[in-house]
Length: 402
Ligand SMILES: Cc1cc2nc3c(=O)[nH]c(=O)nc-3n(C[C@H](O)[C@H](O)[C@H](O)COP(=O)(O)OP(=O)(O)OC[C@H]3O[C@@H](n4cnc5c(N)ncnc54)[C@H](O)[C@@H]3O)c2cc1C
Image (cartoon, rainbow, N blue to C red; front, side, top):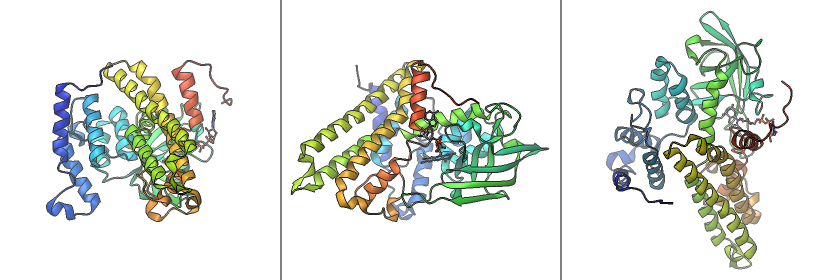
């Protein structure tokens, strides 16, 4: 195995590093609020061809030729520099690839640019109180009435709905057809009359989740993505991207290094906890998982570069399960190290999703938060079914009759 980059790609990495000397911003720009600095640098990065590399220029991307090696160099270098790269929002990360595949020209031009910059925030309206893993049983109705759909029903667990301008969601447009066939993918303006967003308090103390109620909400027919009744196929594209977004090997390595740091700083009977043989054994085991994920990512990457799509599938399917399991092991180990500090409630500034941890309450929040990604975007049991059935051709699990 040759893990060296060719001269061409080494030169490309140098070029990216040179560009990244511009981050953090200097001069007057450094006095702007952080979000504005990030937006400015992201614009410069698109113009330079590094961010949203594969999104065509007419929709606000960099319009570069696909090149997986360049993508990975940009991702690693931007991550190492702490620079704002592609947004990992529901809009940029999930909706944009879906619209690129299934959207009309008008939808692409109207929605993609503002989703890429974050000027318009999106939420994902899939889950309902009785429909999570069994998503195709969803009941929220969208009835066609002339040039618009009339939506009635409820969504739940809708992350960030309270701050979203738009929702992409699945709605039942043909109740008489069998479950998958009667579903359509609609873009809903969250300012439409008849929408009621109710935040839900989480155990981290935050309120990322919401219930969303629809009462005779009008959605123009031009906001239908793909054909009516084909929303299931459209939504599969979004879910593949969601599962890929959840697994990032760089983050996992950093998180593990933060755990090692905590183990060095924590004292047990007057000695650094990292000297305890039981803890060392646990750390070695966790590092095994971190390395396995890194290797699995390389296998997937190599197969993609060689155009071996089928071979890339298995590591890709395992990515989400692997990363959420390993993240939980890391956070659980840190939580155990905290001892009595583990009883502290996370501070408000800790409740910010997946981020680097330096404080005890930051680790408490990370531990509680780590339970969520193992459910979001397809629970771990469902991932196991997918890997077994589609990845290895095992017999299908027993399903509830439809
Ligand atoms: C952090 C987070 C963010 C989320 N954000 C969003 C969002 O923005 N938009 C949105 O629409 N939804 C969102 N969700 C909801 C998420 O998609 C659902 O929670 C998920 O699909 C599981 O559905 P459920 O909660 O109804 O659990 P259920 O489907 O009821 O599952 C309960 C348990 O049963 C197991 N199970 C179910 N069926 C099977 C089976 N066939 N075989 C084996 N085991 C099974 C599951 O693995 C799970 O352990 C989010 C969830 C989380 C945790």
